[in-house]
Length: 287
Image (cartoon, rainbow, N blue to C red; front, side, top):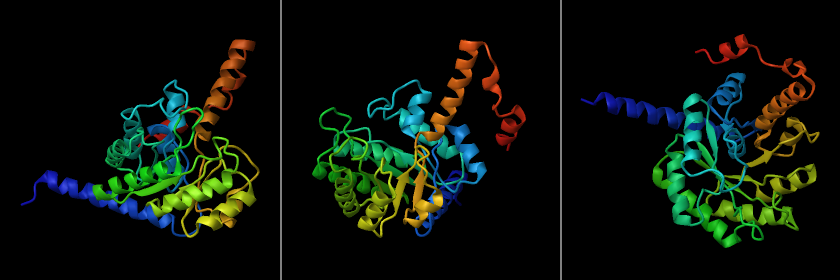
């Protein structure tokens, strides 16, 4: 007779497999939104609003912890703890912003990816930024080896987790970011990445060129400010998934700082006008 632990373990595995399959289906056609919560509360709110999947944000977590968003700001312990908290709070698929894997060495990166997979995520991304001034990007050969190591760690885990390869060329001032991003993302796809992502790309022309160059792989586009583009515009360009990075976190911080400044500088409570009500929040977090 199977033990109660065994039955419960099987239910957890079956449930995770179903969520992973749902995440894969989202990438097969159309375009979907995958916004970025930074804690359990923001994750629950976004899931209840109807978003089909969520992605964590290292920047949002850093700001909440009183830290700058740098490659070394968070430890490999802090990141998985936050990811696990968000995964446990919702039933929708969660993709982990796993920065550069919190390791320089490919072997250590693989071990860290294994820890990330154990949180229950259905996807994770690995960046190619070094965090080192003067050499902000890993050389392509090393960056590709790191993607390959992450892929192997996921495969060895037996979990259905989609790997996103990230080319940080637009964020780090590369002289030809589009061409370099395409070159890198094509290499990452060959190394085992299933979703491709070049954060910082902004224009319709660049996005269309990138999508065409890496087809048929799904492309994630980050929209972290109001660029004038709509979801329908990105969908028409062939973008498969749209994230907002730290934007929602910064919107919350913006409202908070505005209200605080009005109070300290002018003695006005005007900044409290847009606050969510207790009833709305209590209802949101009541099972």
